[in-house]
Each structure stands twice: as C-alpha cells, then as structure tokens.
Length: 349
Ligand SMILES: [Zn+2]
Image 1 (cartoon, rainbow, N blue to C red):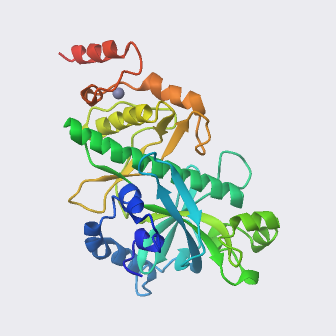
Image 2 (cartoon, rainbow, N blue to C red):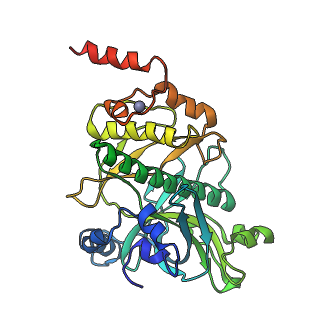
C-alpha cells in the first residue's frame, strides 16, 4: 500500500480517482502528506501504542474493515458509496469511546500507524438503541452531506476566485465509510466498540445480513465514519440546527456567504446547518476543516436533524446578508433585507 492516507486505503483500483482527489480530498494533497506523518500521525500513534508511555494505552481490539468507494459527480454533485470486499484493511480500534456528540460516539483507530477517529451513532433522537441498519443509513447520509458540501465548496471557491472575493480558507474533512467484517464467515464477533453483542449480529435476519454483506463470501456489520485524527485543535461552531447567526469577522462572513451561496446553488432545495470547523493540522495554511455537518432539504431525508422545509425557512428568515453576498451578486432572501442591512450599517456612524 502506498501512503497511509484515506485516499490510499480507499482508492484501490478505482477508475474515478480524480473525483476523489478533487471532490473529497482537497485537504490531503500530496504536499500535505509529506509532513503529516511527522507532525501528527507518528506522535499520535506512538502515544496510543507505546507501552513505555506514562499513561497506559486504552484497551483496543484488532478489527478488519471494508471500505466503501465514494464517488462524487463533478457536474451534478451526486454522491454514491459502493461497498466492496476488495482489500480489507486491519486496524486497532479502542474499546471505549473518548468523545461524544449529540448523536455519535467517537473512538480512536490506528491503521498502519496512522491515527484516525471512528464514529458511529448511538442516538438518533429516540429512546431506542440505534440498529445496525439505521446506523448505516445515517452515516451514509452524513457521508453524502459531507460529499455534497465539498462539491458546493469547490464551486464556491471558484466563484469567489472569479469574482475577486476574498474569503477565509475552509475545506471539508477527509473521511471514509467503513464496515467491520470478516472473511471467515462463521465466527464473526463485532468489536467491543460496535456496542453489539455477538447475538445481536447473529440474530439479524438473513436478508439484513445479505444487505450488509460486501459480497457473498464476506460478512460485514457495523458501519463507521472515519476521519483523520485532528489532535487538540480549536473548534468553532458557526450555526446550530435552526440557528443561523451572522458574523462580521472574515471567517464567519465567509460561512454566511457560503450558506447563502449553497441555498441558491442548490436551487433553494438545501440549507447547511450545524456548521462547525476545526483548525487544520497545518499551522501555516490556516485552513479550517468543516466536519459533522447536517442539512435541511426539501424532502427532509438528508439525515438526523433535517427539518425539511421548516429548516430551510429558518435559514431564509434569519440570514442577514454580509457585504460579500452583494459582492457576489446573490439575490436577497427577503424583501426587507436590503433595508435591514442599511439600517445596521447606518447606526454605527
Ligand atoms: Zn446573504
């Protein structure tokens, strides 16, 4: 295997390599790869694995993963994930989560000495435990949202470039969808991190097992969304599920402009929400990395938290155009908006 990045893990025999490198991996360029193992991965990996460390390594389990091939249509932004049994990869997954969001638990994962985080859903709003298939469907939707956002962001950057609009640097996290599995079909045991008792997997309906299988000779079970470990980075939350604040600083205004752009670019069918970003590994690039995004869509089916038309309306009602919106020539979202903006600017003088 050449290199240790998600790209290398995922792109085996892939005809659409260009899609990957352009659409979902601006962050891991060949240039960035040169320094990442030194700054980040080696340090992280040795911390986790080394027995000589003062802090004992957390309990972890060797797991075999199958990767989904991800493609993004460069013209339409349509996303697809195809499960394959090719080139399973072995990794070490911690048994216990180290972090937790609204819906997902986060575990540490090491593959070929490179540190990743692995996320799975533990709550989708209800009381009940998230099923294997519901977890798969939700993480697939999150992957689609990340891929779409990357598609929007690429077009957005081109538009800003051609209009001479100065923006802050953002990228979307590099990620992959993977599944735990085995090539020895009878003895599969889900990892401790999966939260599945062996019986929960063996009791699945045959049809559900078949739906999960990457191919007929291989079992696969819990789906994970994995990303490169970002270490101790600063996080910034730009918007909530239904809250879309306006910002006057450059990074915030870039996100405000991007939100407005995405809404119009998607022909008013999609609004990004829960926008948050972390600083890059690369101290010199100052690029912020967007992750754990969600969206509101017309049909309300883009994943947990999608409030459908009500969610879209929340953005339309709250978005106050920043100067860059006018600079880009974006149509105002509300009739009164121009007046509001002028009033705000007028009061400061
Ligand atoms: Zn605007």
